[in-house]
Length: 369
Image 1 (cartoon, rainbow, N blue to C red):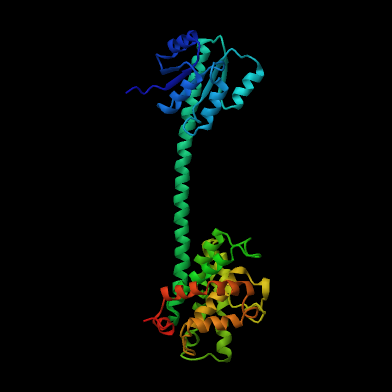
Image 2 (image 1 turned 90 degrees about the horizontal axis):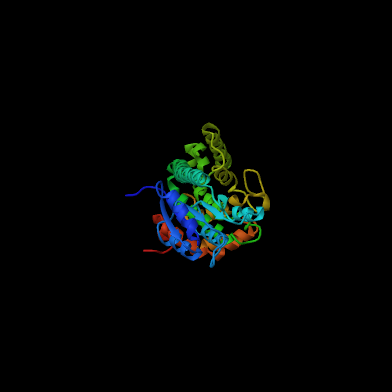
């Protein structure tokens, strides 16, 4: 197998073809095209050459047009092109180089110059090819590392959320249901005024991954309160409300201890603000309206809906219809009106999610056998 570099000569003058072939054939494989059209066919339909020597003045396609087309084609755009021509004006040379040629040699040619420049540009092309391959390999490794990091981040969120879930057995599939509720709301609002600016694909994905962390702060609530088999009273309720603060603190500690920043910010925001109310009567800060982060507003609707359809020691599991009725009555009070409207628009999706990740009491409340 001949592993010498392949050089395509495109020229309509027999004299220069013979000179170039005689000059190059001992070191390189040479191929000849006597017109621009034939040169294009050889370059694109045969094995791609390693370098092209191209005349400018030809009867059909001139060399400039051949160069333009070859540089526009993905298969040949990286092939170095050297113009060989009698056109000696500076403007002609500039035009050739602007079209993508690597060199411009004026006829009559000097054999040593041609040999030297061919060797130089073949070496440069080989180096560029090697660099492209290294860059592609590096890009692939970066993608793999980024993917690995994303999986690690997802695992961190899931493990922390699962830790909170194990301390509150009543919640069952709660974290999975709320995760999909939040995504459903975000999808419904992605083109709405006031939301389209932030609800892009990346942020919605982050919301979906972060939603399970909304109750992480329950790990800080004492067992005698968290697991109490009855309604909370006075100071007990005040302590339970502090789980929003505990959640924020827990996530900040993870960020500080592990030097992680960015991907947990949304989770922290959700954990801290999902009990705020649109009318300012929520906790822990009593934020109102647009002062409540979008993530907290979405999570508030998801969390309350799931609490309504879930059984608790102090209440039965309400049906989907009853939950929707209660939610509608809180529009503009507990809930952002736009987010509540999105919930009402997609309430059948909420019911589907609830049954997909159902607990036994959800099945009973919704009349599903």
